[in-house]
Image: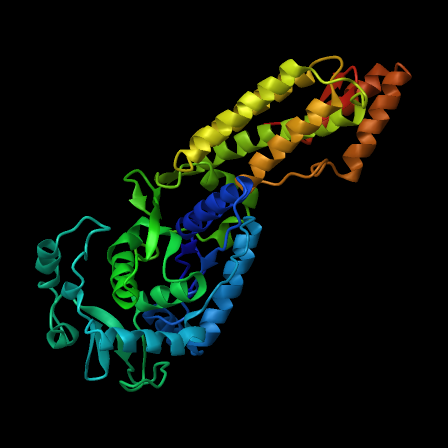
Length: 446
């Protein structure tokens, strides 16, 4: 898998995070199904926005890039995103990029004008096929653009492979003079270098379908003569506000992950993003985030109920084939839904189905440890696909543990006044108690 990564000139916003989380969830599902996944996601560390940010802060472009790569790693780790197999950077692939461009020029797909190098778009006969656009439509749009760069192109549709250096900009020596790569060429070079001439899956946000991914196909297939990617996957936008505007830095309507996770549990944000089918838009609001938090807490309660009953379950109790058959049926339902274009929304519905089944089973006076272990394994595996990791008793601190123990002792001594006092005190702290035949169980109030 190759997934287009961020341009590292600022903190990522939750719209950027949506792509990172969506493809991490897909990667995790592949691994759950037994695949070994080589996952490449690049950092664009040379770009107009990076150069502009560096000038504003009076630092170098590499300093800006390094700062926000570190921030990206910190923010995505908080969201429990697995690190890519390789995170290639443009600056580390300049020699490869120059060689790639030279091959395109030799094959007649590239040409140099005054230190700039352009791609002959019209020469690539299937250009526009991915985004379902015709050359005539694209030409009509491109012909309206003006400026010095447009005037020196052979065709308005042509796009930059190499950009001539401007005064004071970061640049590298090349056969065409000092300059830097165009945006589109970097992904063609890094994808084929790390994954080969034909890759299984190429992913990214739907806004990259045209022109970025269209241009990647044209560059890569012109050079290799082979199909560039077998499957293209594009995640939907995160929208915000009553008008459902796309969240973006250019519109100024974004919320950075860095800011949000100061006040919102990162697992809630991860759960909110991961449980929508990747192609669907996500509408962000405080209400939808709160709903995700409530649903996540219900799953956490089930996890803790499981841990609690596992401690008291009969180790040598024989299994019930009826319960095992029901678990198997639920498991096949989950696979069926997730196999259908990674439909996370339907997949999490099956997790809720499993939750309901487990909670019903846990109400039995006697439960089988074998069934509980299998149920817990499924439950935790499926949650991990969505990037959710619970640990036992993570919500209890020492004070609450002592209060529960004191209440248990008070009940044994028939001191019901003190027992009720402790119950009310814990309720004020958001902890609800359930007295079961196996002992007192706590849960977080929703």
